[in-house]
Image (cartoon, helix red, strand yellow):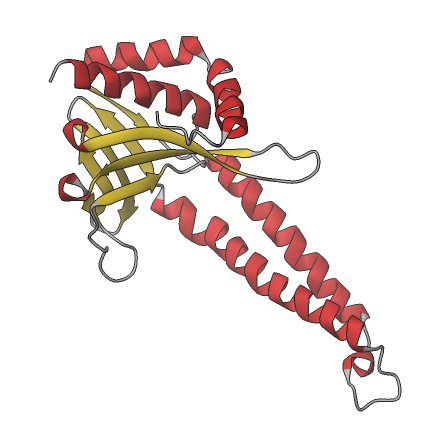
Length: 220
């Protein structure tokens, strides 16, 4: 795993995540790989619907706020105008309504039916989703094309823990991609970010992928 030498804090945080990996679960995955030649990491529907619920709560709260706020206070031509700060404040919430509304629809009606999954096999790594007619590959690469298995963080504030994102970097020539909209761009290197909505914890997935990658690289 390549860590930027100047980012020692990132390296330290990533190592803490690796140290907390569930060794028993990882060993079970290795056993399944030896037995079946592959493992399938599926979407966690509980996590998906929890995200949907959070989005709907925000949507409801914003709509309620707009409902109880008199329209005249947002009209600069009205004597009841509440000021430009209030108008700007409400515009920000309007943008939030669009964003959370999109997330609510995505997590409630789209994601549960697409059911993305990650397949790790002796051949390589493949991410796919369901659509009418069967599974569609979004990202796939053999182990020979993988350059790096890494991790990056989505930094958060307050008491909410930072979110670890597992990344797979592979040579573009060895990667199969299928974009949701349009055609996937071809590049020399492709970095795929593994979904956090899988049932498995990201740190367990990170350690497992690294170990499988090292094992297959050693046998080349």
